[in-house]
Image (cartoon, rainbow, N blue to C red):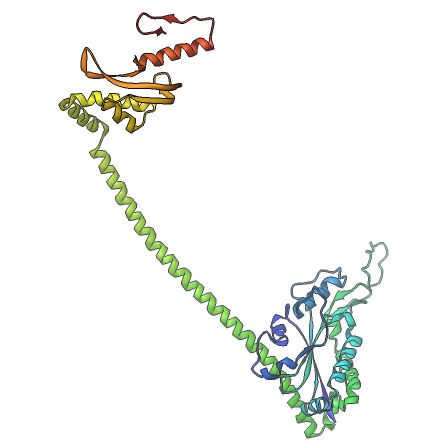
Length: 405
């Protein structure tokens, strides 16, 4: 007759490492990948839960706990259920493994509360079939450490918290008397499979050498599995540390490159500023004007050409139209012509622009619009514009130049 294996311990944090081991998101070295497909979930998650870790948190969120949960408070208990290897192989070979799983679930729910048993997974890819169960330690009733104090006369009494309110307390579930009770009731539930309770206190002296070494073997097999989990967690941590060192080296290299780049740009800026200072010194405005005066002194006609070009450009003519005017051609204008003198644009339709030399001074040019000096034409249009704005003022007509201001 073999022994039951019931191991209970407290999980740390959200127990993500054990979740990875149980759900085989990482591959333990002692697991046979060809048999992993035989592993199965014995408890179906709700629609909003996708993993063991989420199932733990979901139970805590929906239990109606009113007390604040501490950051270091135990949120889950890990329970491993199995038997000695040859007995578990016998149960499997006899076709009773499904019945054994069902009885384990019934014992778990009866012992810890059906809602608190949030996950149970059967592993078939290791040497001995076993179940990993997860229990959220939610209890009700008075705290074990609560001590009734005598009422002092005249002292204000505070309303006590409800003793039947649900609370998270692994210490209550893991109390020493209860741990012994778990071993007893579990062995009783598994007796139908030829499994019995292991060594219990002083009875150890009556245990045979064969039974003693068999118990050690079971414990060794169980510990090996948890060592695998710890090694996987260690490997994950080492990988993260290496990643951090790589990022540190990368950041340092970027910093050095940026420092060198900044130095180079500072040098370029300094050289550019020096160059600009030299250019300002070489090309001061007065020196440029001096050069222009010298140029127009040698070529006096160019000064008049430049004045005329600026006039044509100012009224809005394009370069090609200006070229035609200087070649003696007439240019027809439609749209608007701008007066730089009055800073106003006037509409024209099929206006004929021509460039003539002044009769009394052939070196000077006169731009005409429909035969009228364009300066006089702009003046006349401006006077008409003013009259339209102020009709009580009549424009004064000139003798030869149209309207006077």
